[in-house]
Amino acid sequence: MRFMIIVRATAQSEAGIMHGPDDPIIAEMADYHAELAHAGVLLEGNGLKPSRDGWRISYRDGQRTVIDGPFAESKELIAGYTLIQVRSREEAMEWARRFPAPFGKNGDGGMIEVRPLYEIEDFGEQPGLAKFNELEAQLKAQKAEKAEKAAER
Image (tube, rainbow, N blue to C red; front, side, top):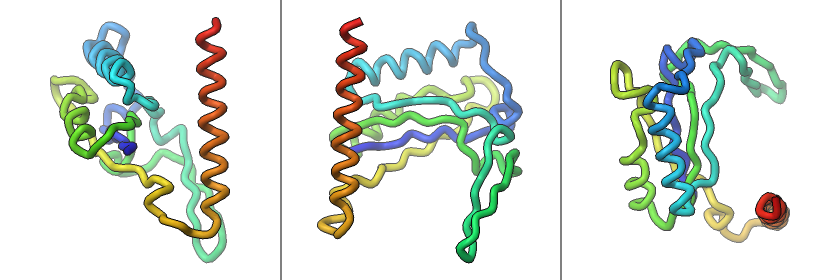
């Protein structure tokens, strides 16, 4: 089962205020991600730049509209994420409980949200899923090939 730990944005993250290399939160997040990697459950984790650097695409009546950032409501935005693969909801909950306060212990520590990802199996036997299964197999093979090449270096 895959779960995404979503770090909600704050006014500070939307302002693009970066944590310095000596900030304890950087070390805490690095340690946390190292624990996830050592346990074999980390798939990916990254911070996101402020919404001013992004855009949205809105769909209405068959038309696409591009809307450039920044976006007004920082509480509705995402500042980062960690993607994990675990055996159960309970295991995901345990890892989420250990997630460091994303913006430090002082002041506004922020908020995280944890959501399960859909898996192909959730959709049952439906026409068209063969393409998704094929793509997933290709991506896994590419990832294994990259890991093998990296190990050779």
